[in-house]
Each structure stands twice: as structure tokens, then as C-alpha cells.
Amino acid sequence: MALSGCSTVSSDGAAPNGEGVDASQPLAGKTIGIAVVGTQHFWDREAFQGAVDEVTKLGGTPLTTDGNRDNTLHAQNHDIFLAQNVDAVITILGDASVDPKLQQLHDAGIPVFGVDHASEYAVNNAQSDNQVGGEALGKITGDALGGQGNVAVFNAFGQSLSFCGERYDAWKNELSTDYPGVKLIEPELAEQFANAPDDARQQTLALLEKYPVGTIQGIHVACWDQPAIGVVQAIEDSGRTDVKVTAFDAGPDTLEIMSEPNSPFVGNIAQLPRKIATISADNVGKYFLGETVDKVSYVDTIPVAGPDEAKKVSKELGYTQ
Picture 1 (cartoon, rainbow, N blue to C red):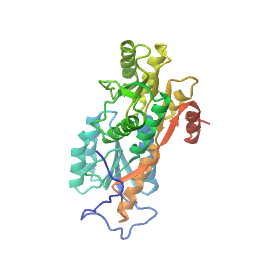
Picture 2: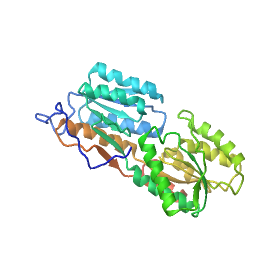
Picture 3: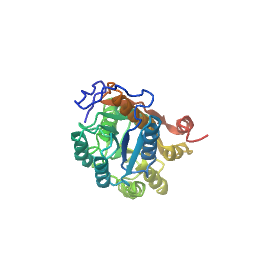
Picture 4: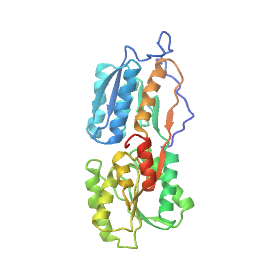
């Protein structure tokens, strides 16, 4: 689903006008629900902690839930916020199963703010600039392959999660426009949400048996990079030095893999999950101050190509010394 960053909220009748609200503590006396799909993954943990810290800084009281990487449980957790009649909700990630719960919150007059979750029922969604990030990753992929080669793609969530589709479409469009010699292998692969590295490793081992040297040059993970950990393991276990890996997220674990000499993991896009969630919490504060809140808040991404850039970005983001 394509989103515009220039539209603004047409505040509902219940939206506050900001009178009597302390601008430095706009969430004072308010309980803010914070629901995260899980905290096993670095991105999720960073976003969750960023939201909690900023809500607290702005004077609010966080009420938190963790879906343990189960989208059904994550959706059900929003019932807690309804029952507690919280003042606002920040919902972090999750698939379409969450949307009926967001509608219920919206209908109850509880404003919802998304972190990587676009919804018609949300006041705002804070996210990476996936269009720019996807295009940059397409360039990294095309350059790493010398503009030629066959690439397999793990793309389990391109249809179910809008931000995944945005990343994949931008990456694919960049390749087709500027690197027409790069061809995508069909059918696409679908990684599991849970145990993604091990699942991707097993699928990659089978893929490499099917495609001998000279018939596959790259493997791309379209939405995130945890599966890429298993992809790299399979490539190294198979002794295949001819296959390069690209993905999207660039947390400390995958940047470390990229930093290794002769790593097949050659391209990634670093996100700033804590900043994204901090902006989401700031938008909650703006809402209660009666200020205009954009429908989408975009956060820049950082392209990472090769081991030297991986080391540099890891230091810049504070992951290594």
C-alpha cells in the first residue's frame, strides 16, 4: 500500500485542542498502551524500548504487551488497552490481523499510532523511507553482481506487510530499470517468521543443490535480514564463493557478518528502529498538544555496501567501538 508523507490528520471530533497541556510533559497523567509483535529480534526490541523511553520522558505511563512473535497474540493484546481504556496506543509491527483491533480502538475514541504498521485507523505511522532504501539496495545488488546474474528472493511478507512490499518493489524496480541483466529466479522463496535463520539455511541448501555454480549469483531477503544469517551459513557450508547475499535491516548481528573478510553478505540497509519509535511517541505528544500530525513520518535509512561500510556503520550506530 503506497502512502504519502505529505497528508495530515483530519482530527476527529474527539481530538484534543491542547489547552492546559504542559508542552514539556504532554503525556503527564496519561496511560499509553505499547504493543510489540515480539522482542526476540533486535529491530523489535529497539523500537519497543524507544517507545517506552520516550513515553516516559514525556510524562506518560507505558502499559506494554509482547506478542512473542505471534501475530494472533499480538492482535489479541490490544484488547487489554480497550479494557483499560488507555489514552492512546502505539502499535509496533504486526500483520493485517491487528487491524480489526485498531478499528475497535479507533471507534472507542482511543487514538492509535503505528510503528511500521500502516492503517486507516491510525493517526500516524512512523517508518523507514522504504522507497529510498529499496532503491539504494537495488543499486548495491546490481553493482555487486556487475549488472549480470540470477537472483533468488526470499519474500514471504511482500503481500501481507505493506512496508515489506514497498522495499521489495523499489528494489526490483531499480534492478529492472538500471540493471536489466539481473534476472529474478522464480518461484520466490518464503521464509518462516519464527526460526527464520534455520529455515532459510535449509531452504538455501536445497536451492544451491538445484542451482550449480554459474546458474545463480545472488540471494536477496526482501523485507528483513534475520533469514540472511541462515543463507550465509548455507553458502559457506556449501563452499559456494560464487553467491552474494543482500537484505534489509542491518542490525548488529548482520553487520558483524558483513564485516568479516570475504563475506558473501555484501549489501544491507540499516534502519533506525529506536528513532522511528521515538518519533511515534513524540507524535502522540503532539496529538495531545493539539498540533498537526502527519499521516506518515519517514525516517532515513543508511545503505551499507561491503565490509568497510559495515564496520563504519556499526561504529556510527554504536554497535561496536
